[in-house]
Amino acid sequence: MIPKRLVLTAAVVTLIAGAASAQTPVFDAFRAVCVTPAVDFVAVRAAADAHGWGATDTTADASMPGVVVADQLTRATSVDKTGLVLSAWHGAKGPVKISDCTVHVAKANFPALSGDVAHWLTFPAADTSAKRVTYRFTTDGDHLKPLTPADFDAAAGAAGLQILTVSGDQNGAVLDLMMIKK
Image (cartoon, rainbow, N blue to C red; front, side):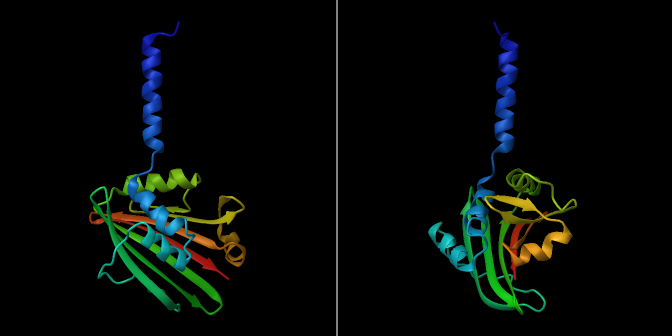
């Protein structure tokens, strides 16, 4: 016979573990428009349209030194009463193709979003600070593989170097996914 206290403790641990592993609807929205399409601009646009992201007068964050931007878009939506603004663009710097997909989250919980990303990627961040977490990785078959600086060039020449950054302050948070391919 199992003591009732042990059963209750196991149930509480299971409930807490389940809550810790659940991802926020905001992160799910980011994954749906930026991650699932693998930062392919046409696929990002299609995903945003399919998920009901609407027009906004916000301008795209399309600026990177030396990159010629080919196309850009912005969209907005609300998830759980939280305003989200999508900004995506793609372009090139010589033969290197660069795509970027960013979601600005109004009044977001930076620790929660950082936790969502850490849970999803399952490997440590490359860089961390109190207000910013950055991951660098590539697709290796059917899973994501963290990269060291020595791996960046090879990854960019193959499946692509992906850089996922979560940053936050008192005004909200930003989830940004960039893809660099040669």
